[in-house]
Length: 467
Image (cartoon, rainbow, N blue to C red; front, side):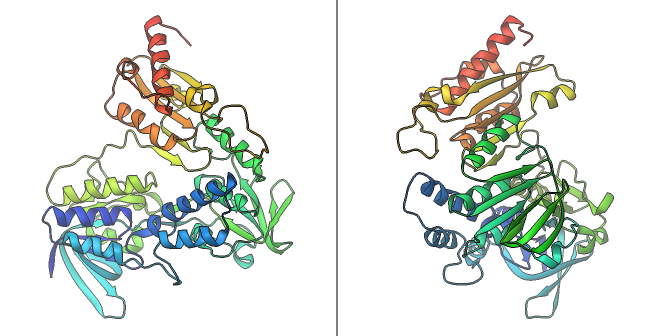
């Protein structure tokens, strides 16, 4: 059977491409060897955010046990009273749009040619005018002495466990590591983070990193930053991790969360369809998400930013082009968010990064705790009496002085994941700071704090303040 588009992989990027492609009238097949819906739906974004919500309720005194949190998480990932998630809802969504879902492992055998080894069946040949590869990524497991023998969790295990360990060591202080650390700590698990950089959330604004780090410390999480794991062995509470500085930490479980690696496109056979891969088999798509004539990529396997919202966006761009509807990917303003308490978000460049790019930039920042919105939110700290201060946080903007527009924006405070999108839109459309300053923001909100910050930035621009 011939198709207009064959999509390989049904995570966020592939699901978006398959759904939109069928809605646009294309004859579309989506091939998936595991769960339709992908990592985000079943092992990453959705379960971790459910667990964070449960942990947040527990933090402010609710009688909220792990059994309840686990049960709600299982509902979230369609794993109630079964061992493995049920993806029929995602399959139904694709089929309702008009796409055909094929379960099996795919190999590209030539231009427009895909062989699928279906589950429980014989190899099947698919022919298509265009191919979209959206095969995602896999956890990166560092080469640490003894790690394989000692055993470890990946993030999949960390978000899906039904039984909490008594203690855990987490290798990696990025978004996955800090989010799960806060979940575990709030449910009474002795938790240690080991992060090779000098701070947790090393890709975020330093103010955001410190605010999240302080909250984790207040909740009992031990942070080992600026040091890496050298060796792992069985012992202690379960696993003993020897660090490069000579110290050791131990935990009943060891979670490896040091990043993910794009799927192996060379092994998939994408070069057989005419694609040229870069160093270490990396894809280099153009701004149409194209890697060869009639071959497109989307999501983590494209080799860029590894976010669900980026994968979804890329999938939609790729399928529009695959069906002859010209679409250009604009990745100039991509938001990133962690759902810790406080939430952390950002877009664009820090002031240092902007200056390194040759931009005449300055930074303005607001103390969220001293804002009207900050005053209304009591800090989440252990206390038998009212805490008479505002909720800690910051909102920071980086301004391109020459153009009078934003070069970046960052926040760590309640609601940061939502308020960042005004800055995202402003950067995408190059909206002048003066327009943002003249926009009415509801009181008392975090967005109002951002609006006041824009007024401060406008005044600096008007006065030629070199600060």
